[in-house]
Amino acid sequence: MNLQGTSNNTLNLQNDRAASTLEMLRAHPKSVEIQAYLSAKLSVERLEHVLSVQEMAVDLARAHKADVWHANLAALLHDSAKWMDTERLYREVERYEIRLDPIEKLNPSLLHSRVGAELAKEKFKVTEFEVLEAIHSHTTGSPSMPLVSQVLYVADFAEPMRTYKAAEIVRKFAYINLERAVHHVARAQIERLLQKGGMIHPNTLHTYNKIFAGISNYGGF
Ligand SMILES: [Fe+2]
Ligand SMILES: [Fe+2]
Image 1: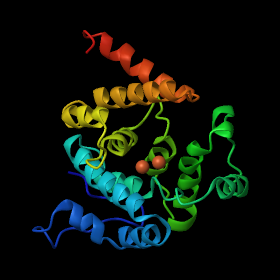
Image 2: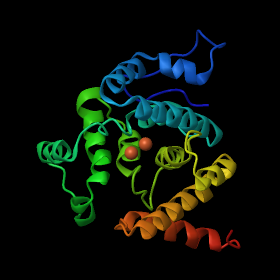
Image 3: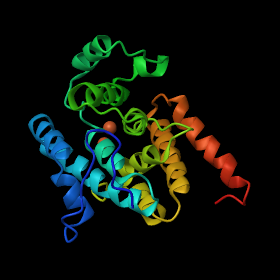
């Protein structure tokens, strides 16, 4: 299990073997700092969701040998801009000079992931690409997601407080086959967007197609 961060936020977990990994991660000063910000900014429900995502992401990271510290940071920060209204989000997009793609320009619900990644860098001095990429891609997915991004994408969709059927299905195999879980999340997102008549970001389609193509080589599922 890799509990070693790569930045100044490095963990030192030698002295408390009895505590669970999650408790140790939550007690780290960087986690405490982020949690204080989230408590001040997010609704109680949103905060509960974030903590639930954190728990599942850390668990999944351990199961799939991803960097647990990076998964912890990405999960904690993934919805850190979710408290901003649409006007504020567009202001932040301008301030950070984020270049939006045409679908993002028309979908304010996608902006919190772009702004959240910048906020993680600016406010919490997160420099690890793996963490920033995971925050960036958690809403749409991406066909080339590193392991921590896959972990966050799945945990955000299927954390235990999510009560919809698709989340229940994903929870069943996320620990066994992460790629299959990612594929199922992309598929569920596409189905949901089609049902409500929303635009579908190309990255979600690419995520679905890429994994489908790979998996069908050995018989599909
Ligand atoms: Fe989100
Ligand atoms: Fe979320």
